[in-house]
Length: 322
Image (cartoon, rainbow, N blue to C red):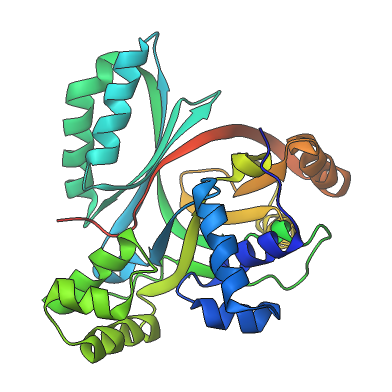
């Protein structure tokens, strides 16, 4: 059932998606309303589970990690067996995204590891437990993942210069224990106040504040966002993968799909298809409208494509919880 929201609700959601650490006062000033109205509206959005939480996008490549995408197609398995696999992936300190999906895959996940040997060990441990339940699995390495803000909440036309954040710069940094502790905490809740954060980590508020600023400046912290239940507003989430005839056509297609306000991710992988992107579209509009727009412009250069629907995000925690 679709929850009713108005333009102010959607503008609040978009602002929090752009920076979920903004205060109620800052949001009120931007949206030209009162702090009490903003506070009430956010509480309502949380109570309705439209906002399910707040998280921090952390570029773990700067901490020496690689991102490995694993798509899983299950054999005939019971509900209990599937839940066991999902619970294992969600509980693992080696995953930061886990989701249930529909055809051709049943589960999508992203693992992190310091190198190929470590990932191979992690994957083998997983397969040792669950390969008997799996029909097949696909593994690719992410080069980078661009995260676009949910402009579709307010806009419905193509947008030429959309803002985004990127993880995958791969510039290794050595962080101290305090910095790593702060990252772990804000990865779980990006709206945790500085005073509360400092108290939990036994440091001064000014130290906590300066650490967050430094990590942002270094690009380790890429952004603060909301864990948004798109289905509550009658949106559906899909990943679309497309192969084209050449690099020049690939770049033009990437430029085109990033203009859709519905595009929320644009990924580059080693071993995957040429253009891979995630969209969240209104159910009544459907994925077909996006595909028609793409094929109208690029039909003569597309050699293959596939897409699948994400049912539910089960885990979004970028920082390993050691």
